[in-house]
Image 1 (cartoon, rainbow, N blue to C red):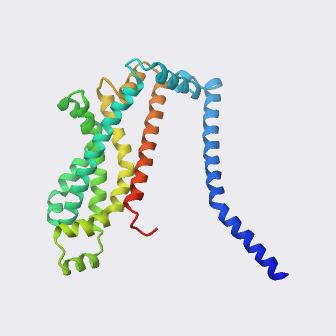
Image 2: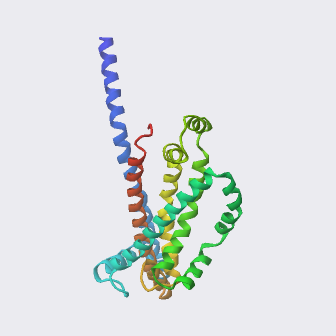
Image 3: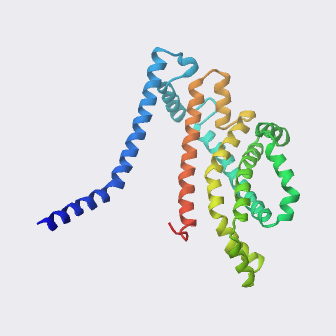
Length: 276
């Protein structure tokens, strides 16, 4: 009987263990929803009774602004036009910045001579405030999409570059030496040793890089543009429409979270060879 009781207890413990991850996931979701509800509720109450909604707005006004934008459009046309314009700038800047950052990062990471020569110039370029570059890009490339893509490119490039550079430097010396002894060429080394070793570093930088690309596009539009979410923010600021600023921020956040989900799926496919 004692053995039967122990077996039943073990089976119940195993059942609880099996259920725990799923139960915990739903508990985490519930906790997040509760925090958001408390935050929005307290903000709505404060905006109604204590603080001036003209300056601080409140969730009901922001929600109404989003409904107006998606149903009636903005004063500058359809909200989908503004979103697509900003998204194009961010995607172009992200793609260019990621490609150039990975290529230069890996090349300089494997060439100590080139990295020593170019290091002070790269550090100096990285130290330039991005808002200054955004203003220069508007002067150089005009108010069109090119200046915004250039701003997004700069923000993405440096983050990806430094991670790719460090990842290329982190190849274990034993693997590096063994590959050379086995007669691997530079191209084979790059393809089979360096890039797989740097993959985790590169993918980690890409998760934040798209957010930087969005910021670059928004900053460029805020500096000067005729469409885009940044232009809506600038217009809302000029008309003291705090709800419009918050509404544009919510749309930006949704775009960044969507991009993060896509990058997570891509990362899982690219790192299937790695042990979990």
